[in-house]
Length: 104
Image (cartoon, rainbow, N blue to C red; front, top):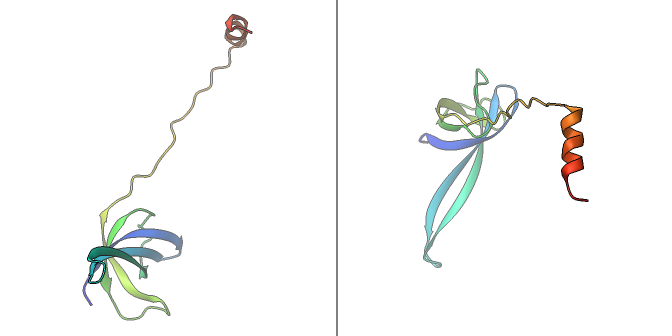
């Protein structure tokens, strides 16, 4: 088997990730390209992978019932959203002015 490239869709297990690998093939009857997705469980020794990372998997000996792949490298890290810190200003006089100036 040759190495495959895919996207991490789950990392909820210890030292394991689920990677979705997309492939395109030409359908002879429809004369169109069809996209198929396969999910592989892979071994992530140091728990570095996060959801959305693009990784390269290498085949290995069977590590468990479903794990036959090892994460060789992380090609692209996912951008993790961090909400900006909100500083709330609570000035009672400005709130009453806003309420008083708005038309009723």
